Structure formats: structure tokens, C-alpha cells
Image 1 (cartoon, one colour):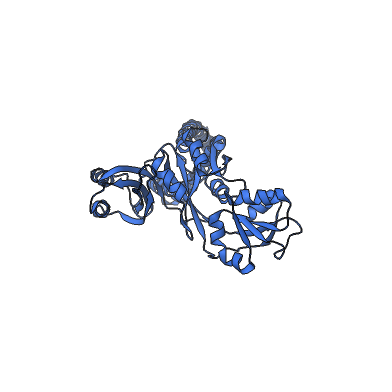
Image 2 (tube, rainbow, N blue to C red):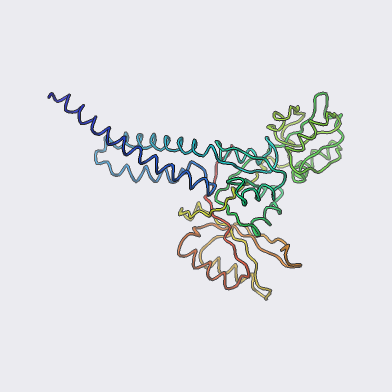
Length: 365
């Protein structure tokens, strides 16, 4: 047997071993896809992928081969993610609105291969995930201009779902109308109250009356079905395409950096172990009706080194003149330090709920 034949024989034997290992790896990837489906997590995990490549490349002793092996790992990861995306194609994601709504855009960004299921209103989408009709619900948490979304804050406190993923969607409002309408012919604009508030300068400049609607995409649908030229909707450019409306004016929102944060809600709380700089967590709690009780709770959080980036209060619907508090903080809650903090908080809180943890997403669409 020649040297060439020996090398080819060895490659054939190695390929057979690699085929067996490839099947094992893809079976493990399928198990991860099942977990991501139940927890409402994205297929891509860039921090995990980079850590895997850096760790495994150190196993190659020949420095000339290390770069090639890193390319091999990247290709393997991409194939694994592609397979997981296919498996997650049967995933059902609830959102509030219609195609073209900003929640639809956020859900498509988070779960590009899933089936997106529209619901009228936040509670209906949330309940669909709670009951298992959908795997995940994508709901807005906060707008950079109008602040928190109160109805979703209430669901975070009183519901059973967890937030395991958060993403930002830039909000670009447009004035949408039927064929034949002009900026001058429009007398009234219809949209979600927050969208109306975010475009008030434009609305007042043109002297338009306003009418609130359940969400921006449904407002666009209503205008399209009316056939009228004296009304217009404030909604996304995607809504115009979806419902056959024209765009009379683009980017009519007052704040050009307007952004909404959306959360993916599911019935499983994931355990993340990231760096303190890119991991956040959410707490919802009530404190005892005693002097200094809230200050004591905040001191406990700070004493464990967690940096609070948001603190809000909301009326407790189950008890008159009582409030619950919503906190987002930076740091790894899934740690011994986090466990100790939660134990100390439970001693001063009547109700304490760890509503989820997520890695900070700095990407934009």
C-alpha cells in the first residue's frame, strides 16, 4: 500500500467516526432546540458560540491548524443553528396586533422561523402562552419615550410566565391612508394611545383629531377597510404594505430615537450564567406596610452588588391603595450571591417574584 493509499484509508476511517459524532452532536442540538422552544430563547447565542470557539481552539496543538479548526467550528455551529431553526419552525409565538405591528416585527426578529399568532390585546396573548396554546408570547415592556407599558407590568406581577429574552425595536411611525387621501384631506388619525402620544407634535401641527385604537396595525386595518379618505392611521411602513395603504408621511414621531423593548414570555425560567456586565434580571414584589420597608428592600439589593437600572411602582389591583414594585437590575441572579439576596428579600417582602433574567441585546433591525 502506497503512502497516498494509507492516508486515504485513514481519512475514510476518520470520516466514519466523524459521521457518528456528527449524529450525536445533532441529537444533542435537537434537545437544546426543545429547551429553547419551552423557554422562549433565540436559536443564536453569540456569547456562548464565541466562548465555545475560544475554548475548543485551545485543544489544537499545531498553531498553523488552529485557524482552520476555528473555521470548522464556526461552520459546525452554523449547521447546528440551521437544524435548530428547522425544528423550531413548529413553534407558535403569540403577539398583540396584526401583521405589520411592532410586536409582529419584534416576534419575527426573535423567532424568525416560528409561526406568529396574532391576538387582540396583551392579556389574550399572555394567556395563550400560559395555557399552552402558544409556546411564547412577545409583549412590549417599555418605550423609550412613553415609559413602561402598564398592562404588561401587571401581567409580569400577577402572571406565571417568565421573561427569558429581551430585544429592542426602533419605532418609526408613518401616516397611512387610502388611495386618494392627502395630508390636507385627513381630518382624524387613529392609532394606539402611545403612538398618538409619540406623534403629538405632528398631529397638533396639522390640526388632526385623534381616536384611540387597540394597536397600530389594527388601526391601519380599520382605515383600509373603511375606504375613507378623511381618516388615517399611525402605524409602521410594514402595516401599509400589509393592508394596501399609502404612506402620506414617514417618521412623524417626535423623538427620532424612539425605541420599544419587547420581552419573550414563556412558562420556563432559564438559568443563565453570563458576565455581570451583560446579564439583567427582573423582580416584582410587594413590601409590608411598615415605615422604611421599601428602603430596606432596596438596601438589600444594593448590598449584594446588583445595580438597579429601573424602579417602578404600580397599583396592586387585588388590594386598594396598595402597590407593587418592578425592578430591573444588572448582574447574575443565578448565583450564590443572587440566592442569598432573594432569601433576604423574602423576609421583608409580602410577595416576591423573580420574573426572569436575560442577556442585554444591543442589536437593532
